[in-house]
Image 1 (cartoon, rainbow, N blue to C red):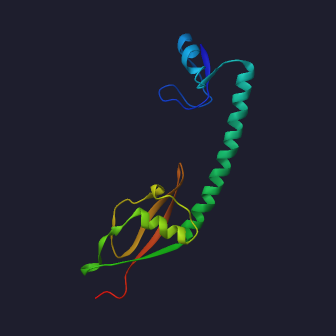
Image 2 (spheres, one colour):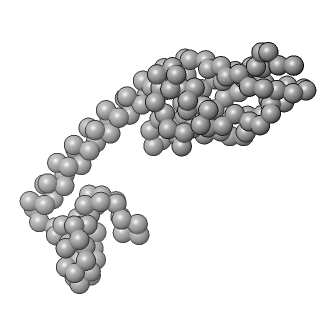
Length: 151
């Protein structure tokens, strides 16, 4: 039986795809649970309209993400940390600290969206990535400076 998937399903296919499954699987599981629709002209038309709407939404999200990437990439962020000999930090710069630093400049980014290729454990210029969209990352410049007033 041919069905149209209403959402992404692992090992079956992606949303909007027409797949062939056994009659029992379609009638007893996929269709009643709302994971799929039987293939009819009306259902195909509904799914095509839904795909177009989702594509327009995705294009808007990508455009917004690209604008955010350009804003983030043009900024330079500074953080002050305690450091010992040879400019080695006591501890490291965490994603939580970076998320807080970004929010002080008006960028609301979840710490889970911040990607550190390696821990930041030294003073100086470093770069980290911010996941803005599922496949769009911003490269952000960070300057780690020594906290003043240390003994």
